[in-house]
Image 1 (cartoon, rainbow, N blue to C red):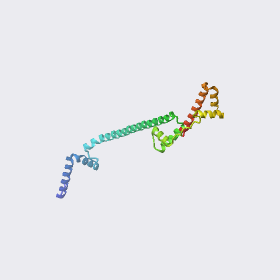
Image 2 (image 1 turned 60 degrees about the vertical axis):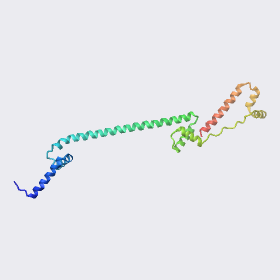
Image 3 (image 1 turned 180 degrees about the vertical axis):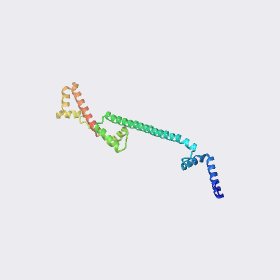
Image 4 (image 1 turned 90 degrees about the horizontal axis):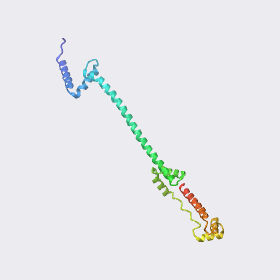
Length: 198
């Protein structure tokens, strides 16, 4: 057997004590054994060799689980965004319909939409009020036949067929009055539609 000098023996004893201390400490044992296996792969270390297949299985399961969890989260986020977008579209279409129900023309609705974009508004009701405040409707036209004296002047001038027919029938024929009411309503509606179509 070869002889070992004192210095070499002391060094080997120190290394053995360090190795022993590393193996006894639960925090450093696994790291030490992994380092030994890395340096000497052919050396059988049951704790490391038995754990390797289990560790690779766990890593594969963990990777698959992570992918699946990511896909579920993406699907939930997409569903949430789709519901939110659908709700916004529904509210937007409902607001447009409310404007049309109030008598706005398609051009008037388009103007309100432009106003909403320019002012970063999303609520049609609020936008309509602000739009009408900034763009007031024109005042209704002043009627020319507002009193009896105007009717007398129109009869004398002979310029109004309605007044003539009214005087001819003595106010007894309602068809004359009905025709005039229809004419006035049509003119008023046109004026209102023009005001909303701004």
